[in-house]
Amino acid sequence: MSLQPEEEFDKLFLVFEGSSSEDVSHARQLWSSLSLLPPLESRLESADIRQRLPVSRPRRSSTAAVPGHIPPVPEPPSLPALRQMQEERQRYAAMADQRLEILALLRKQREQRIQKELLSAAFKPRVKESREKKPKRQEDSDLEVDRELVRQLQ
Image (cartoon, rainbow, N blue to C red; front, side, top):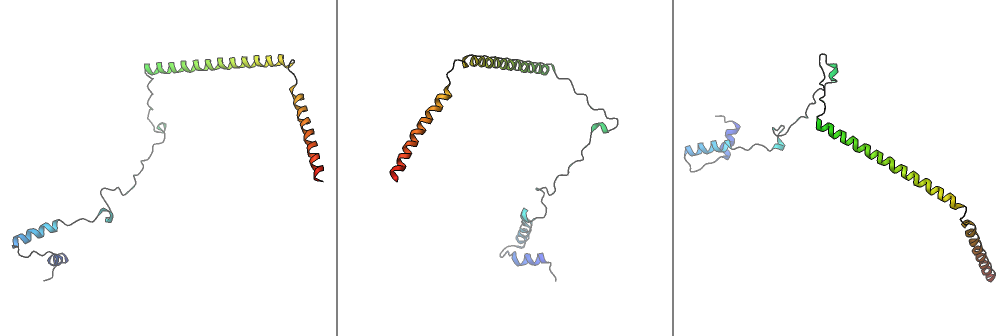
């Protein structure tokens, strides 16, 4: 009598001592049906995990290339959408007008400031000459102090 490997395995490891033959057969059926599956990591393929990347569908070039195909005509915007677009245009136009007014006012103020400076330029004292003289005097006194210190060292 040659036994298959599973039967030999069952006889070696499934031992039911002190039980009736019916209980033993039921127990063998139960234990053989409860065999565990290998973990997902050890399987080559899994139903839960997609094994392949999705295939891209071929893209259609332009719709005009298809003979007999008429492109759909876009529907005109609805009345509320038209009103909203018109209000936005009016708002942007008002902002542009306000910007132009502000630039004109700034330009006018700049011209007035330049005219005032030109008028008062004739009456302003020359500040540059007085500033140039003072540092020269200080430099002269510093030179004299330095000369005296050198004489003392000799």
